[in-house]
Image 1: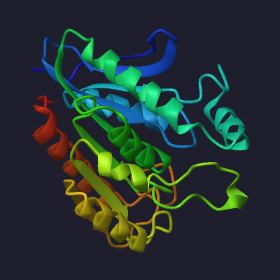
Image 2 (image 1 turned 60 degrees about the vertical axis):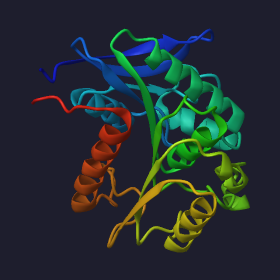
Image 3 (image 1 turned 120 degrees about the horizontal axis):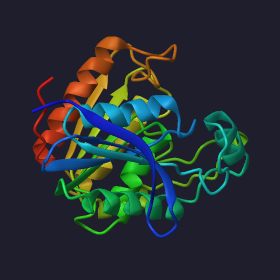
Length: 252
């Protein structure tokens, strides 16, 4: 098998939602992953993540959650505008991720399984959609230091996110959580609370925390990048998705 891929901007669903998609060039079948971008937006680091999944044998897609509010804007400008509006409503995020999952399932080379992953605000959204969407839409979720899942952001942030803790009982799939011990959003105490809530509901939650890592430790273009934690985290992500989605890593 080859690691050759095709990556491009596409438009999905009845609304023609802008999205970035990367697919392995092969017959498959391949599992799918919806990548939820962080609050900085539909940026190059997120697109690189989409391509990384494709190189490793996944159909991957990232819907631009800001496309309605800031069509054609650069990621930084779109993010600033959306922040000024208080963020994107949860129900709109849920609908767009559902559309992205349907686009993956519509591919002839798809194996029928879809995972979701997000970092920072995207980690919160990964939990949100996995609880809000019907069973069978999302088969596995990865939350990378999802901020403001249990407590809303401070009023000074201007963000209108609300707690999703009352939705967690409806979580419909296994979850992998990757966190930094030096993070403040979420702080380790909040991660402990998340683990306790999921345990109370009998949910499958695999949690790993990294000493010396803070928020954004996966991002190589940020000061908080921690290579050792990021490398281990990626290994865990692929092992988790391979196990729950039926992935088979491509030969490089």
